[in-house]
Amino acid sequence: MNRRLIVVGAVAAMAFGAAYAFLTSAQNSHPQLAAEPAPKLDVEQVLVANQNIALGTTLEESAVGWQPWPKASLSEFMIVSSGDPNAIKDVKGSIARTAFMRGEPIRRDKLVKSGSGGFMSAILPSGMRAVAIKVDNAGDSYAGGFILPNDRVDVVRIARDDEASKTRGVEVLSAETILTNVRVLAIGQNVEEQNGKKVVTGANATLELDPEQVNIIILAQHVGNSNLHLVLRSLADSAGPPETVVDGGPKGGGLTVVRFGAVQQALR
Image (cartoon, rainbow, N blue to C red; front, side, top):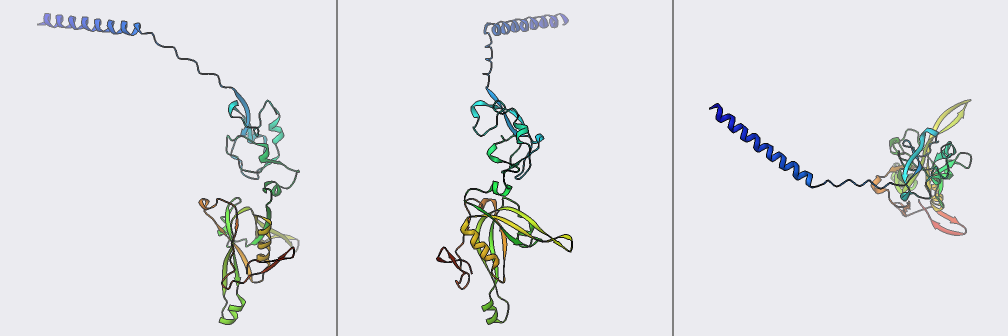
């Protein structure tokens, strides 16, 4: 019995060895193709943001750095080391006109040097104006204080209707939207000096408007028995330019605006 097992084992070993030798020779008969080296990519050192940089941030040297960038993808707005090796020191102290994401190339047209003009004028597009309106410092008139720079808002005017209040014997208020999709440039507090001390007396919102809208909102701000509120818009509803809403209110009345001799109707 043991002899049979020995013979069977020997035959199996010989068969395995023959199969292994056959497979080895078959593999050797087909030479493997050598991998071709990847083509060398031409790159340039481009100045990028080392961190997220918010709008209005004053740049420090640590906020930017050099990063390899494919030459084929270079833009004329990018800052490259071959053209400006001292760019890191040059951009130090500049103010970001727009936000930069980490790894995003730094562009000179998105920076403004301190001392070369006010920051607000630097971020204003051509043809637009910045105008401040009064809001309360508790945030009740601007979405509970959650409106931030670069948000889009509608401007709503709340006014007391004197005629209706007199007729009905109770105070009658009206609300009307006068501007929509307006960009907020800044939200800040008003600090005044009283009895030798600086105290917070209220807040203001600075809005980006065209010249015609500036006239409308200034008039709305100075009409008696009225105040302005900002209504935050969804990001999905923020595309497009700001618009003036033609709304004369419940009775269709309005302020008479005379500009360069021409009479036009504004808001109530």
